Figure 1 (spheres, rainbow over the protein chains, first blue to last red):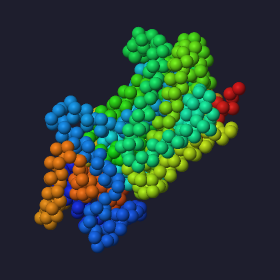
Figure 2 (cartoon, rainbow over the protein chains, first blue to last red):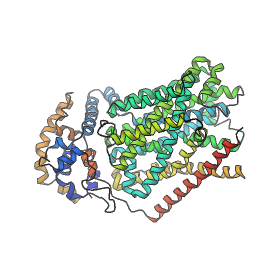
Figure 3 (cartoon, each protein chain N blue to C red):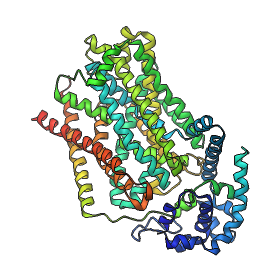
Figure 4 (spheres, rainbow over the protein chains, first blue to last red):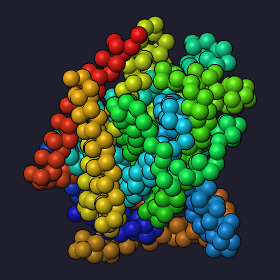
Length: 506
Length: 101
């Protein structure tokens, strides 16, 4: 009931103040919220932040300052910037609107450019090298449209509930289903992280850099970015790195693609791929897995929460997500175009790894083009390593109910940062172990992402249709129709793969 | 709705009046472009939604929803689907690697 009061009364500042004052130090114990009695983790004065706990027990509990954390203050600073930009909007509409968008873009751009990661770029490269300009160009654009449908829901969930995805699943579905969802996420994230470090190693390997140095450099970047202790700084640095995904565009231009063929393929979805049906299906699954994955859901929702977005920001969040999808689709298509010369010259790229694509492309796109391609693979690995390890850390912190914000200093949220760095270090170490089954991991990582997606989408759909959680922001008819269509496509793709595999084996 | 009315009662209004004055002056400050004094907790609270404050989030959790039979069946079906498909993927990837020259 209390939750409904919060939900139904959107961000009136007066009500906010009234409710916070009431909630924080007067009524927490007695109201008891809508907690399940079975949920032992949700204690009235559960694993609170020490400052808060001390304040609540203190005779000076009325001191609001004692209840606020570093995280709250940093988030309030971000909110003030947005409020000020909105005020500017009243005077100068264009300038104000641009300021608001500049402040609120981030999670959507990061999630899509993060998903243009090393194995994804490898999948796009493989489609370009094996099938040239044709079916896969519009298909990639379609997969990003599917991703957009999914990610828009996470923006709403995060902005309305101020809770991460893992936390909501545990709260609403209980530990049993929560641990299943976390199992899918953490397995997929770890395997994907390994492939990111393979990409980092391969990208820098093009320049003759030793694997240990390359992987160490990747880890150093991940570490450097999180030491800022501020979500905003982390987001801007990571976005600054992510924009280097655009390196695939000049590489594509240097490949001198037939632009009329590109236009025709977008309209007619042809020429269609020919060859071994199982290989084509595997590639289709890999391309889907390169765009729609569970970590994206968890990451964007948590990032929206950490950024402090509110329901009023949902339209800007949608713009952010659309911008991310458009940029990522553009760079993915550019990767296909950059590697299309391999198809036209009959080069067998079926066993190529990331850096080998750059080396093989050098005769057609020149040394500059090949260098850009290799740097692009390195960038894709770095940005995804940052985003995916952060996604694991957010989910871990939400489930354990410990601090899980990039606005917290290292000493205050050490379990969060330890998970982030620990997962990155473990993946990096695996890449350096001689004879580790890296080929096996690369083969299965995108396929696992596709297979794990339907349950993740089911949880997302149930949550975003939960009126008790979302209030007036529940999915509409068309939102549900689009999301269900995406789920059906993913289930069918997975089942098709399973049937093809069984036939292939027998 | 009853509870909402209760929250707007006189008791709450009293405490709100004190905070509101500070927030009001902050609002005008924000419009003039002045940097807010974030050492003032009232300013911080005025910028955040009630359930956005960490202390509030630590104490307030959504309760467990009742899962209908159809939802349970769907979740179990998807779980079985994932496990079965994972086994197939592992077998096929293992075969692909061992059949490679």
